Every structure is written in structure tokens, then in C-alpha cells.
Length: 95
Length: 479
Image (cartoon, rainbow over all chains, first blue to last red; front, side, top):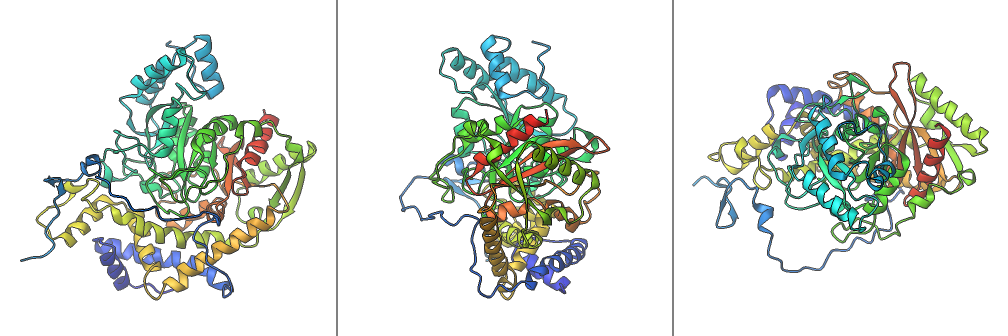
């Protein structure tokens, strides 16, 4: 499995990571090694096998019903900067 | 109370000490806190300033006759699990100053039972590692040999118990993170079945695999803790409604009625000779006791680790997206004048460690268009095969007996530069997470260097009673 530097850069950009040239070189090599290892699953004939989302089959995962709740002020207290109980984020657009 | 002996304390001994008036919870808690202050293994990231107050409250409760078996018993908590008002770093610089706003469900339950939280233990960043070297707060040193790793990712909890800094602890296990450090540090660790214990309040690494579990000095203490931790929680949709077993009675069930399977694939690969020998001797001892032991085969074992290193990073890349420097702290890591996009990149690049970045890159790749079908979907199918294989084998045997790890504790730095060889140290533990089944590791011997050797027992999902039954039998047999 070939895994290019450009691919690492593209993925880092998608995942919102800034990588140094050294990190790009390192991850390119390491991820390539890992992909070569995990590629062994392609030896299996999986055509008729169903996918499993977890180890347990009988979990009746149901969404909870929606309800309006006032959020606990504690939960956003850790945000770096608050203004009128809203979090302040860096600007999204350059105007 | 200066000479309070903390060596391998059990919950029964602690309660006997309380009843006899030999020591109070406050005195015991103080003794542990003193020992933690002088700890040279780096097992703890932070201490609970409220521990003494909690212990005093526990003493009152014991006096009033309203206590449980856990009241007044000190507990160390892996820093992945949130405790209200305490720093919760997840072993990461990005959460260095984050203070948890609520108690994880397990913490709420154990606090209600009267436990005293000593502090938060060191771990690999967001529970990602097999050596504890990925912690932003430095590696934990193995109490048996401080030039060696504790294993990971619950290395701090394992070291805390091995170094007598806590009698019991909580860890989390996504691919072996309770069982592998338990083996390396010569203690007992349980990974419950997926859904047995609520994950609410455990920082998510790979949500379909993560479980919280207890770590201790003996089998009975694991049973005590699980009795209080287990059970459905409406805050975790993946927690199971299955009935919580009578784990304490299970300790005394007739182990000779159990059939034990030895999966040949677990003994075929590279295992250190001392480990192989210790396991073989243990199996002989059990046979002599009249236990029924048969060889079984799990042909997909070899694919479990490969599937794990596809499923896990995929889930990691999604779960770690929440650490953006805005909601959970880390905002001081970058200049607010940057645009939002550059801000995220800056904060995450400084705040996240190398292993996190590696898994995010890998996971983003696995989930990206064109590769999703080739990797992620196939890994989900391999999960089905592994589940089917376990279902089939557990229709023939009650338990599986395997080595916990292919090696004993390795040297610090030995595998740090080679992620793939590090990943291979999880080779015997990951299948249990993928299959959703339960597993328990207990120490059975030492190698030629005096390092602990762990034995792993695996049982079907929601069959923890069988683990306790056989583990307790082996523990007594080896005494």
C-alpha cells in the first residue's frame, strides 16, 4: 500500500492538524507500515458477511426523546472566553 | 497510625480494620496520600483535595451503621474518567487545565457506596498506548523495575496498586488497556462485557470498544467493585439491560464443573518462553485438580488485531474532533487573532501528542471516500466473524485460558519509535473488545528477571460470574 506525503498533508488538513515536515515524513512511513499490516483482512472472503457495529447484538439502541433543557452553566465554564453566556470563537470569515 | 501496613491491602482487610478500630478511613486515606507524595513511579497526575473530607464522611457513615462494604475504601481513578470538581486531563496537554463538571456514572455509584477518591492516575493520552509513554505528563515507571514500562493505557492505575498507593483502582480497556498493564504490574484487572458498565463520563476513544473496569490486589475486590459499577444507565445508550450477576457468590461456585478451552492460536506465535512455561504449568495444575481442559481453535485470531487497528483509529479520529481548544480549555495554546480554521489547527497541533495525531491521520484515511469500503466496512465484517467464532467456542466451553501478553514488561523506550511493534503487544487482548466479551487477567508467576507474568481468562458476554469463579479458584490454588 503506497501512501504519499501529499496524502498525509491532505488528511491532516481535513482533520485540522498542522504538521511539520518532519511529522509528515514520519507519519507517511508509519501509516504505510500499519496499512501494510492491516491489509491482511483483504485475504478473507467477506462478501456474504454482515457488518457489526459493536460486539453486542441485543443492545436496543434507541434515541432518547427530545426535551428542552437549560444547559448547565458549568458545562461551558471551561471555554476560554465567554460573553453573555456564549463562547467566543475566533472569526470564521475575513471581512 | 504511623505504621499502617498498606501492603496488598484488600477490601475485606480494610473493613476488618475499620470494625476492629485499628484504623479509620481518614487514617487510611492519609496514609495513602502520604505514600503518593513520595511516589517515584509517576502513577498520579493529580490528588483529590477533598479526599480527607470524603473519608471523614465515610467514617461517620460507618459509625452510624449505614455503610456498604465499599464505604471508606480509597479508590484511584484513571484520568480518562471524570470526577466532578477534579482536573480531568485524559493524559493530554490539550486538557491540562480542564476541570470536570460532573461525575461519571461509575464514580457517582461508587461515591454513593461511600468510596473515597484519592486522585487521578496517569495514562496514555486519551487511553491510546500500550506503555504509558504517550502521556503528556511523562511515563509511569513499573514498580517492579523502574527502567521498564507499566504497560498501558491504564498504567498509572496498575502502578498505583502494585506500589501500594491505592488498594483498588478504575481503568478503561479498549484493546487491552486494563489487562495488559495488570499483567505487566502483577495485579488483577477486569474488562467487563461491552455494555456491562456505563461509559458515561469516560472520555471516548473508540466508542464501540471502550469499557470501564476495576483493578485490584485480588479477585474478590474486582467482584466487589463490579457489583456496584455494573448495570443499565440511561445516560449511556450502549449500556445493557442484562441482569447484574451475583459476582460474590460466583467466587465460591464449583470450578470443577467448568470446561476450559485452550485456543491453540494463542500459543502458536511469538511468546516469551518463560510465559509459555508458566501457562503450561498452570494448565497442568488445573488438570491435576480435575478441571476439564480441551484444546479449541479460533482461526480468526490473527485478523482481530488488524480489524482493531482499522476500527479503533476510525472511531478515534471522530471522537478526538471534539478537542478544538474552544469547549474544553486549551484556548491559551493559540493566538485568538488567527482565523477559526488556523486556530483549530494550531491548538490541536500543540495540544495533541504524536500517537493521537498518528491515529487521527490513519482514522481519517480509513473513513475517507474510496477507502471506507476497502477498510472500515471490511473490519466491521471481521468483527462479525470474531463474534460468531466466540459464540461457537462458548457453546463448547465455559471459559478460554490464554496468556495475557506475549512478553513481560519491556524497557522504557524500546518500542516508542515503532508503533507497529507497540501495537503487537495487544495481540492477545483486542479480540475480547471486538467480540464484546469479558476478560480477566491475574498474576500467576514471575519470569527470570522477576517480572510478573499474567494469565488471561475470557468468558462470553455477560458471563463475568464464570471469570470470577475460575480466577478465584486459580488464585487459591496458587497460594
